[in-house]
Each structure stands twice: as structure tokens, then as C-alpha cells.
Length: 421
Image (cartoon, rainbow, N blue to C red; front, side, top):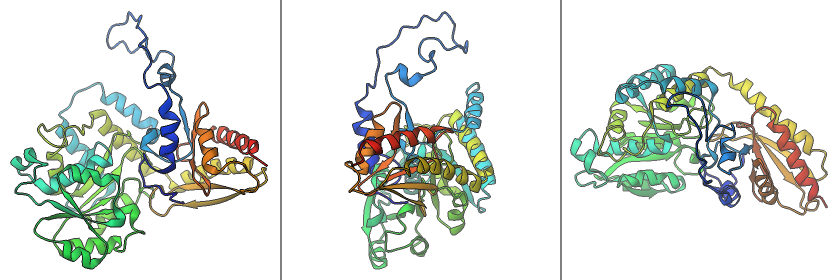
């Protein structure tokens, strides 16, 4: 899939332009509607807000048909019904949160058949896993350091990363107080390593861009007795990546829970060596006076992710891909009747590894560019979000609900016809 200048998780590239310029103009708040409910707390009956069934319309918002990617800026993915059912049950009881975190982690470790000595915790998204994972690397289990961070006095303070791997998500490393040290070559790495070096960071989707590839980066880290952290947030499917990077020997790995796994958007997985995972947990909620205290994960979300992961692992990915491809072909069949339109189809090798469709426009036959068409689709009600840059309109079906492909096809065909010359 063409990167279109995008990184991975939202607030990026063309999607940000569309979401910011179109969706950001909407009213964020509506006048409060007084409740006329006479039902007591816990009745289960919805009155007042939510009574109509269209909760976003009640707030003056336009909903979205997502024909693009699992982007945080528009809410990630749609949660699995099985996960929502488990979350509703979880909401009816209390539990000791650290016990729950440990129990869920054990269950996930068993499901993924992780190597001996590896564990899992649920975090508040993959970005939280980065922050809390590095906090654990820096502080260990030292109670003084845990309350002191991001003041790194007495601790190591530098994290090495390839220049091609820099992104908005290394801000989570810097939040801990650590300094990013950029490198490009193996020689740079060896010169950069010193007594202040705490770890080495690898952004998985950038593997093709950096001079040092994944396996070599891991080898360099371990030769220097340094932990290697792999950010693989949007890099499933294939589901095998959930365990293969641990089997390679990466010390900490993170994945998003709210993308292709389709768990709660506010969840992520931090997989890694048990001591490091434990130290990360010491630096996060529900523990007080920690840098990760704001990164709270609810009991409902933990169990929702557990259930979503169980369903995801049981899926036949080939069947899922075929269904998505069929939806994309419905769109292509409708639009192919318009002169000057051609298509390419591919699957991104690392991030967002699912079928995609690129719609190319002959400039001689259209008065609008792909990004203009994308903006028009985003301005509709409901809004339709696609990728749109200079070269193509790009779509996936991972978040299209059944039948929405027909809505997208009709809207795209209408927009293209209006700009045919």
C-alpha cells in the first residue's frame, strides 16, 4: 500500500487535513437537554441523552463511513460485539485492578504461546506502552526513581533511535525525561552507546527506511547488553507478529488493541521480558505518584481486549481478507464505468497489512485531483473518509460495515462524474 507520506496512527498526512478541516468545523458541544426521566439510577432504561439511538446526532455531530484506515483521529476500529458484551458484564462488579492486570496478562501470554520468561500487560494504547515501557527501563523497581521520573538524576538517560525511525510517537520516550540520540549507521550506534544509554528503539513500520534492519538492530542492542524496544502498533495482521517478535528476542514490543484486533480503542499490549513488563506496570495506573498514572485502563477495557484478542486469533485471516476484497471490488466495479479511471490493488508489507484499492484519475479527464475528491466525500453526511493525495484515492474495507461499500461506490461515482471533462 502506498504510504502517501503517512505514518501509522492518525493526525497525519491527508487524513489529518480532511478530519481537521471538515470534521473539526462541526459543533463539539450541543446545548444540554434537560432530562425528564423519573427512572432511578441503574434502571437500565435510556432517557434524556441517548434516547433517540443516534447519540452523535444528539450532539450535532456527523458520523463517518470509514473507507480509509484504523485511524485514532476518527476513533480507531469498530469494537467486536463479543468484546462489548464482555465489557457490559465486567462493568457490574469491582475487582482488584493489579490482580486483574496480572490475570489478563497470564491468559494472553498463554493464548499467544509466548517464550518462557515473557509476559504481557494491557496499557492505555500503544503510545502508553511506549511511555511506561521506557519508564520501567529507566527506573527498574526502584521506588525512589519511580516517583522521581522524569527527573533522571541517578538513572540512565539516553535512548538510541535511527533518524529514519523518528516519529510523533517518540514523544512518549521523551516524556520520561530521556534524550533521543539519532543514528544512521552501525558505526554511529557503536559511537553513541555509553554509560548513559538506557535502550534502543525500533519503529517497526520504518524497517525499510533505515540503514539498520530489524534483526541487525536487535543484535547490536544485545551485544551492548541493552534492551531493544519494538513499536509495532499497527502491524497486525498477520496475527503471527504478536509472538514472532518476542521469539526473535525483542525485549519489549507494543501493539494497539483498538486497530485490527478490534478491542477497545483505549487499549494496547506491552509484551516483553517479565521483569521489564513488571517494572512498566509499577510506573502506571493504578499506582499513584507515577508518570503513568494518567494512562488508566478500566476493568471493562482489559476484559474487552482479552475477548477481542480471543476472537481475532480464532479468525481465518484469508476469509477476512476475501470479504474485504469483495467490498473493494464492489466499489471498483461501479467506478470503472467512468472513463479515465484505473485501479491498482495491493497489501502494505508491514503496517495496515490488509487489502487496499487505489483509484487513479487521468488528469486530462478530470477537473479535480484525488485530494479534492476525498475532501468532497468527507464533507458529505454521513462523512466518507478515504485517503486522497496527488497520485490516487486510496481505500481499504477493514472498517466498512456490510452494505457501506455501496454507499461509498455511489458517492465516489457521483463525485467523479461531476468532475469529468
